[in-house]
Length: 451
Ligand SMILES: *Cc1c(COP(=O)(O)O)cnc(C)c1O
Image (tube, rainbow, N blue to C red; front, side):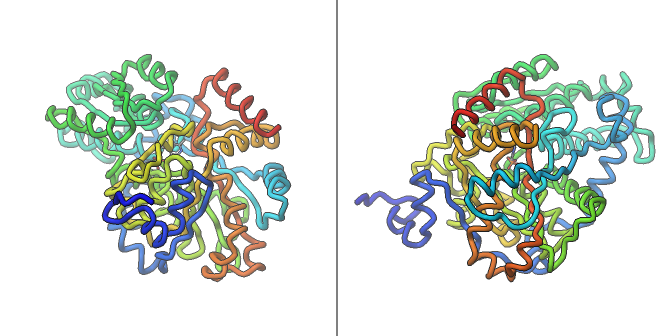
């Protein structure tokens, strides 16, 4: 028995206090349904942001729509609004039920952020939004832009020249760097992306082809962020996008929920007491899933049930919330290595803001093994003909985990009748930019594991 302590208690003491810790340190797939959830009306104040802040973010994205139409013609089909499809996945649903050997009540939908234009991941929401907000602020302060201008003007050379006097920096496991790098470079900013060791080579190559400076680190995400922040702080003209603490990123993600409401309405999907909505969100540092969940709570109140999904090797948000230590704890403190094929989720220390703000508004947390991610990726390909990156598959385990946890469903007042009418949305957070050969490798790996 070890007597070494981790944040003031031995591992045995932690395990006694929080039995889920045993599964986490054993790298076993597990789930933790939070005892801290509270009614939305009460807990939403924890966030310190309101519906009006989401309105403001949505309005800013509308102002920039003409710029996107002008500069990124692939956004023309949505009139310059960056949005992804919501699609039904009945064949995947049937295959998951067959593999689970049980019925999975309700219906399964996929939110395909993998198809988002410009950077092919959920980061096209928050990352791009924060850069737009910064660019707008600079241009307005310089007297070059006003809120009722046609923002297509921003594509002009006087703006590119103006922005080139300013710098932007970010630390990233890959996808945030892609989003921030591509939009910043296009606007004209000097942009540096500090990439953690797990970032894929093609993401670095793609960024360099856009004129982005890529700095590579041998260390993990938190370290890349720390060093990037330090370098940016030394340059007064440099704006650092802080993935660990940014409310701007968070609001960019939150807008997704507003738009999802319209998509659900279009498909005549009810969300109310009799028709619960479960949204399964892959979680890295927490800003993406946290922002989306915040938006969902403002839309659907207590009728939506956000569930976060993390790799077994990087369960940072689960650990932060369950221990109450939040960004004071890293998975490595518990001997968990933070090494995973889910590069977008390879985060050892959670956001310092999201866990505290959202802990009473998140229903549960599940962990997923890398092999499961590959299997699901191959299953998605085989059943629905859709492809995504490993990180993006984490939420797909959600419907089965929730169905298996009757104690949680009872506690939340979800009877068997209500659960049978549930809507599950797995947020498929990235993948369309993955090069074909790399994607073939993922699918082949998954097929092999499926046997
Ligand atoms: C970044 C990312 C996430 C999670 O977002 P966080 O804000 O880091 O929690 C999920 N999926 C993919 C593909 C990502 O790139």
